[in-house]
Length: 293
Ligand SMILES: [Ca+2]
Ligand SMILES: [Ca+2]
Ligand SMILES: [Ca+2]
Image (cartoon, rainbow, N blue to C red; front, side, top):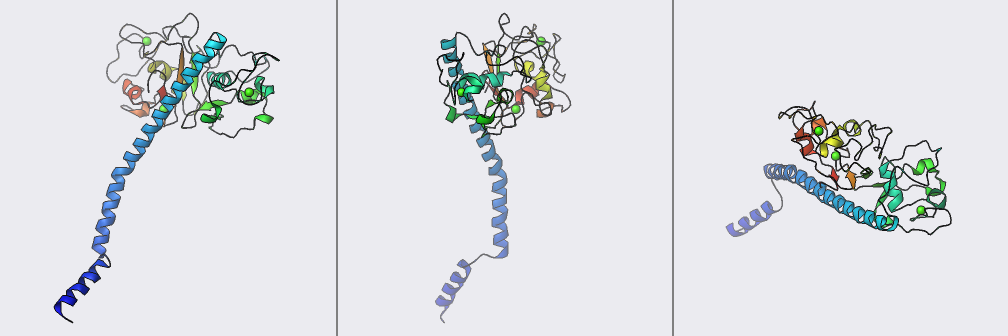
């Protein structure tokens, strides 16, 4: 065997496999890259999904305008003609939104089988304002594939339009003479379990701050009770836009997605001092709404 053939066979031998050290180096690089790229990929995914939800909220906004053209006003959570007085489940804006824009239920539930509804028995069937096949419909736990044929009104009250993260899209309509949150019932019932206006969607284990309206009002610009907040002081909404506060939104309705973390409103854990709800938590909140995306 000549020197040349030896060298060739050596090259062949070396190119046929890696040494243990080389393998470890390669694995180390892969692990390092994965550590950098996976969080980037998941952030990019969440960003893309948030953008999709923002588009869905826009589509819902257009549908609401069309509904208003036909019926004279936006869907009103306080006045659903299909709801019998014996119904025990409280009306929620999120449910009214689904019933007004898609009405996926049977004739028993909303006057017309499948998407669409009647406002009175025997009257014209209004077709769905949103393409039912392009939106997820489900219950509060995000479960789809609902059997409408066996559903009664009480359970129909628990059907919502879901966002990309399978949480109900909330709907609050501004109340008559209160144009924004300047008055406590501008968008929100004074009492979460009753009173004027859309009742919140309930998930008390995860969304206590939102349901108590602290988080909801704070997101709308009501962060203090009139006294200036120092950088790390807890927010304390009082239902009014005081001097030094700026109303974030004063439109006719709120559309609200809980965002990728599936929790409505800011949480003390989002940023800063984890035991206190602060302005930084509001900035970090990943919710998508029709006034902020
Ligand atoms: Ca229907
Ligand atoms: Ca205030
Ligand atoms: Ca959220």
